[in-house]
Length: 355
Image 1 (cartoon, helix red, strand yellow):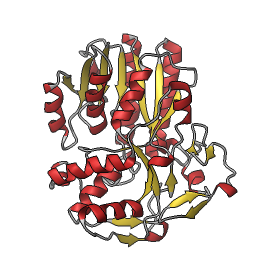
Image 2: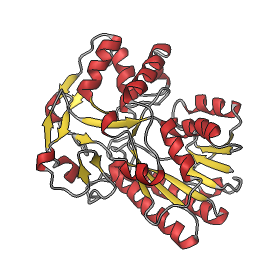
Image 3: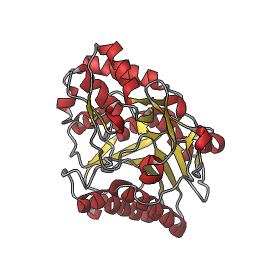
Image 4: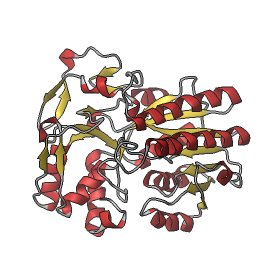
């Protein structure tokens, strides 16, 4: 089997390459990356040493894909992954659409011509910001939890939100580009006869992540806490009650390996996530860091930030029931892994350009 990974030198893409080598016998992996993110070169060297064939190119340029080999599957791990993209002053809305929409279209054209299957990595941020913010919450042990006695929205239960939760706008410009990519990918697959899987991913976390506060919050928080960088609890009372779930890219690789061996159903949208057991608030994460690295208190910042929501826990029941998949690595084990990386790389945030 030949597999092409876009964004191969990023954290998720490189981890998928490493673990798929172990999970799929005889797999030949090709990587494609524009290498614009600080830290990418480190992964590039490591991937080459393990036999991954890498091509330097930009997915926005269709011609950059023309010399790639014909592969059986494409795993699209390339995107601008920040929910603030297009509104944060670091990228324009047009740049965001070029990265996340034009790039997807060029990948789909490659798949159409090569008859390759596509596994598109999407996001939890395709869901309605307004309806997520209106979910009933109560505070328990320094974190928000869902108030099950007041639930009324479709697609949410004690286990978290499922794939039927509302995607009604607003979902952020970033979320809109990913939702549009899902729709066009499924249409291409149905029209041109190649398999398409959509994995809506929760927060991915692990050692070696190019952590920023907007993209890799768990990794960033540990590195910043240990370095005594300024940390802030933004919004929601400024006490860090907001909750996210997380999972490890090695677990994502196991899901991807299963999907390469199966034909997708007509509605091939699945959650890949840590779920309720792998969820934690920022305040709880800070308490873990205080014990591991010594005390360092974040500052409260009561100003609201666009698209922030208090609680996101993704229910992976469909993937478990239909594909036999669930995350194996606990959040505490993931934090321990990142903690060891923090200890070994005290200047990590500077080396990967995290502000």
